[in-house]
Image (cartoon, rainbow, N blue to C red; front, side):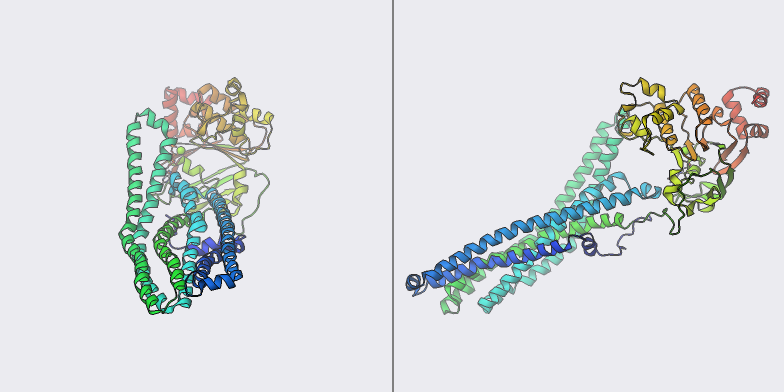
Length: 605
Ligand code: GTP
Ligand code: MG
């Protein structure tokens, strides 16, 4: 797999995240500072309540103080309430900041990924399954969003709260602080052990999710096959298995923390005990005031909670890590087939000369070459027909013209320009392609025909439909050209789909028209009609036509016969008949008549 540069990204995950916060970094930093501030502000309540207890509630002079210095009492009370309100406001604004930035990052990365995926080459699409890609732009990206919106905030919250309280504890009574904090490094050690255990679980979990999504996606889009073979029960079972796998892995991942949880919880629960025992002794010995004791007790949670939260944070961090790995794989993937750095623009039409020079080709994931030393030339406006048994390499050959793949040897030239020196968009805009398996969009018939050039008007759409012998059946449909066809053209017959696909290829008025078995599903009569209109298009156009029927190929200027990736015969209908090879046999087979008649029919042409 050339697209998976696992662990080999130019940036670390956090650097990558930072890069994608561009434009929101300032506000995000402000948000992080806000988190620190509102956590430090947590100290104000115990601080002021400690003061109030010491001055006005406990101690010998409490009553006296309240009478003589009630102003200070109210001052402390107002400060306590004021800071609490202020803290509430900061938390509120802060939440908005995190949500805003995380959605901005999500939006940006999702668009970027979509753009990347759009621009990938064919090998990419045969490498990645749709369900897996969908998981990356949905579930995985959400884990990235969660990192920005929640995990980072929690890390800062935990550390700032812990840090502030630790400092405050030392400021109040360093001995007491030391007794409470001495056990905290143990928590980090436990979390470290937890991380090592849970990281691979998240990687696995993410794979299971992608697996489940892939099953669902393939099954839904292939539902017709499922129904045809009455395999519903089998598919339901298959999905159930994937679903169970995912649920089990999810459960197992959750369980990992349960193994470590008792230790962390135990340490956290130990804190109040230490407080009671050691604090009590200090209190009795007079080494600590009642106010300080209240402040300590009131803040014990602020060091216990971050400890408890650590497991959760680490869990979410590992989820982010596994997901961002998948997202970054696409983010940093590079299409192999792309514009060369010095690619030449060619906005104007081609004359339409096509030349293959010694072209050999092998799929990257294939074991053997599919095409061997293919050489031929088609002059502008000529028609070339390609024939050959199934699997002999016809589709592979024409896929080299729009540079869907690149030859492993030799080169393809259009108008004597090597196509790899042209800008891809300029090259492909000039090629009208009707692929072997027709894919229509869930859109109106008009929308489908005008897909390659949405600027053409209704009249032109109708003209191209006429060229492809589609206008008759379209006008018979209830809403004519406005009829919406279902996903992948559901609601149309195979031959109807092919004709719309042909109209779509013609509608870009291409300099080169490539038809891959486009009339295989239409009847002879309609095919003849299409042949006739292709001869009289109102724009110049070189045609490359893959076909099995002699009736389609015999009028071509040149016919290529491919066998196992080699050109074995090349020439006009008459020339090939005279050769008495594969083509000749094909004619005999298809016309069902003997040699003499075949030759006669050739002479008549
Ligand atoms: P029909 O359309 O059936 O008439 O065949 P074709 O002549 O168009 O054959 P095509 O060019 O599609 O395939 C030629 C050979 O390449 C076959 O042996 C295929 O198995 C192989 N092939 C086609 N597509 C791929 C691909 O994406 N990857 C790999 N590895 N092999 C492929
Ligand atoms: Mg094919």
